[in-house]
Image (tube, helix red, strand yellow):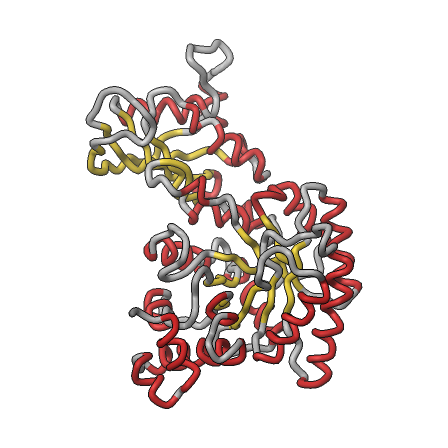
Length: 415
């Protein structure tokens, strides 16, 4: 029955026989090894052996993904089914059995994990505590993207200087502010001192305007106990969000935090790129993101259109749609966070290519701080760009009577 199978899609590449290699992976990653075993009975295989469910050929590659002799290099998308009874629902077991050993298989010139199709038993994992709806409730932003910004420079600001920048951003009208992912608790800005300097600014802004800006604090630590102490400092001060460097804290750290967390968890995926930059190796975001979603991230950074980093637009679009697609229910969708070099000029294409949705956070760093009219104009320009996108008006036309957008187009647009 499909409810008893964990289905994993791999993109395999080999100068040899694809069907034979797929069968070898299914055997090696479940009941078999390099030789026949007296204990590998028909009954054992029936209960626990993985099996190849489908093989879809792809065009050959002229150049191998791993350094390999021979060629041409045959490619296919292969779905292997693993019995739930053999794996269970523990994430460490899932990753060890279906991913870890596959990369080591002899004969592969390339392997990439494309997706997991997980049975309903995996719904036991908590998933997001806040997600899209909770993020909107905490920021009280509806009907448009949540507009966020980042403390810049990323490193070096003392707590008092950070507080001044937070005041500027609050006054500018942002909905969300985050510590840069590189900022956790350095000597020049210990987390406790930063909280003590910044939270009064957040509180005062709320008292004055009625708007509580969400601030996500860098609480990550390889020691789960220290991470929870950091979490508790934020909660005690009235904070409601945290930045989690998910690859650095790991599956266990994330599990430990999510079980106890009272904060909206904003996931930064730094380090993910090494898993995915080579198209024939590593892992697609569809597979990677599902694991972290099950473990409980509420907001997920996924770059954006015309990002300042390497990632092509098509990869961002796939990541966005993956976040927007339920695993088991609509509640397990995290809020997609669109960032990396965003200033508003990408709003129209982002809106078009993500299914004309505003269920996202639009994160501007330099696009807000670097606006010639100041941070308030930077925020206004992003709002105006999204208004234009939703109304189906070109940015150039909308900028004719929207000064902040016009200035942004002049500063950041094509020259």
